[in-house]
Image (tube, rainbow, N blue to C red):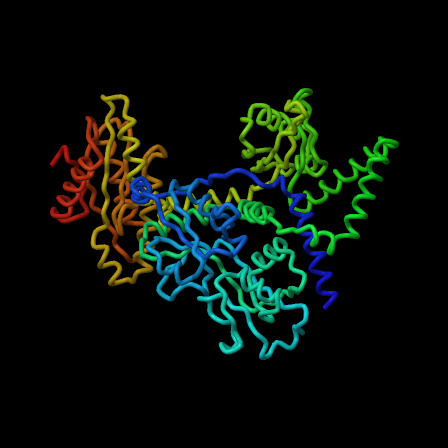
Amino acid sequence: MIQHRQTLKNISFILLFILLIIGLSNSSHAASNIFLTEEERAYIAKKGVIKAVSLDGVAPIQYSDKNKEVQGISKRVLQEISAITGLTFEYTLYGSLREVFESNAEIAFGIPNNYAPPDMILSKPYLRSETILYINAAQDPNNLDNKIYAAVRGSALPKGIKEENSIYFETREQSLDAVEAGRADYGYGNAYSVAFYTLQNGYKNLVTIPKGKEARAYCIGFFHEDEILISIINKALSAIGENQLQNLVLDVAAQVERKITFSMVINRYGKEITFIIIGVLSILLFAITSNVKANKTLRMNNRRYEVLSEISNEYLFEYFTKTNRLQLSESFIQQMGTQENLNEANRILKNMLANTAADRQYFEIKLPLANGEVGIFKVIHLSVNDDNGNLVSIIGKVVNISDEAAKREELANKALLDGLTGLYNAITTKELIQTAICSRQEKQRIDAFILIDLDYFKDINDTHGHLAGDNVLLQLGKVLNQSFRTTDIIGRIGGDEFCIYMPNIPSLDFVKTRCQKVSTLINTAIEDIPVTISVGITLVNQDMGYEEIFKSADEVLYQAKRNGRNQIVAWEEK
């Protein structure tokens, strides 16, 4: 038992030390770009304040601080969602899960998947944790049968624990207090909360043992089936980068406010305090008598920080503003490879640091790498001022986020394109065409709008199967890319309906020639399946809106079908 308690004490000191070292990693919001549909943007514009509720006393996931203000990881996640999307949240914490689920709120945040009611819709998880066994130091962790279990009211009992051996408390902190005081023998909790309250309350009779009793995934729960709100929040959760979430968790965990009394300090850390006082006096004396050795120790400490940054793919720097000198870590210099790349990185970093706003502590840059590629880096920095408040230098770190940025761009492209043909999807096609119509500065310029529909496509699916039908759509997408210009907007706007917008055409005959090429190529592209298309064309040569243009093309498209299909009909020739 003594060994367990000593281990816990060591872990506490190590955790606090790590949090102090990486405190520089905390940054302001990194508002990721996400693709929101027109309907979702309109929803956000009209949506008022969203009432968000949760259970109090589950620090650091969510809790009320000494000023009764809502704090925690979950609130910070919602603040990131707000920064990314524009949604506004109002936060309220209740003392029990019953009050949470009986409230008139729209969402519940920080809800573990095993705490949610069966009919509640859950978002993607934004935090996962294994459970930790915490027991009173007087108990044997290998013999917990018939011992008193400290449960949180509203949560399901872990497998194998009997109802008659359980005592219920409203919050996790109350259950930990009960085990510490001996009113209960043991309990299970998520690793974040157990570590937080252990550090805050300074438990001396509590022993913690990692034990994967059950995994917990923390989500946002929706009281009503609001599909648009669910979609927006899930997109925002996907857009929050892994590094951003880690920084967020560490920032919240570092704000633990320990409940310390004088007797607690003397009883537990009397020897340590004595050693610290002696150590401080020794350090002061050493600094006065040997400045050279102190500088050497400082350089050694800086190297330790550099080693830590290399392990985590982070590179430290310091920029001296008065001399315009940038000092980079050795590992960062190796990333650049050549002197030419290093000079370019120096120039870009100096320019950004010299011109960045005083309150801006985060930005992204592109830098050349040793392998010839261009990497994307996140730069986090803080200002160092002298006693008079004058800027001395800027210190920070550079983090390679190239993989994260590539994934972000891939997700954005998927949201713009049709998954089968690779052409623009219906929403993107409409937005691009509307932009092209609004940007027509030359009133004499003639543009063309084309609708294409596959003839008897249902018969193809029924006769040859849906795989064959998908292949026809795929081949038509390829033919359209071959037949039209790179400046033309090409999209799939329905099951077998395609749309092309051709800016600045020389004549109607030019458009019809391109459409005839499509008709010829698609008819010969697939063996054993005859494929024809019907085409409707309208010219855009005046102040016409998208709906009016679409209606004209759609009318002549159906005239082509009524004429027997495999036809090209223009509004101007009907």
